[in-house]
Amino acid sequence: MAGKKGRSGRPSNKTYEHLEDLLSKAWSAGSRLAAVRKLAEMAEAGEVKAAQLLLAYAYGKPVERHEVTGAGGGPLTFAEIAQNVVRRRADRKS
Image (cartoon, rainbow, N blue to C red):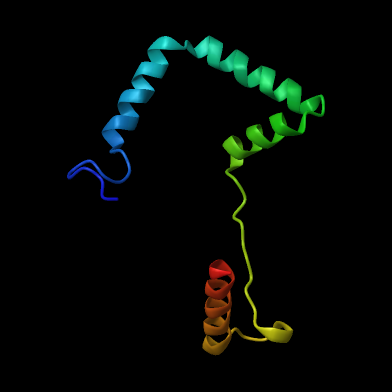
């Protein structure tokens, strides 16, 4: 399904800047600081989700890496990829 012409894809930076301006006007700096402090307190009290959120925003989420190997841990060959594609298509039809 195609998007609307000229409107598909990610929103422009202008959109994000506008949202940041609105948020700054609606939520005072003191309230934001209080929210972050509360989140830090929750994390220090052992709430894992609070700690994960705080760390993700402070340092960024860790990069997820997935290593794909062939049979026996060796290099993945084109033949193995083709076999897996054929097998998955057959499984979907059954």
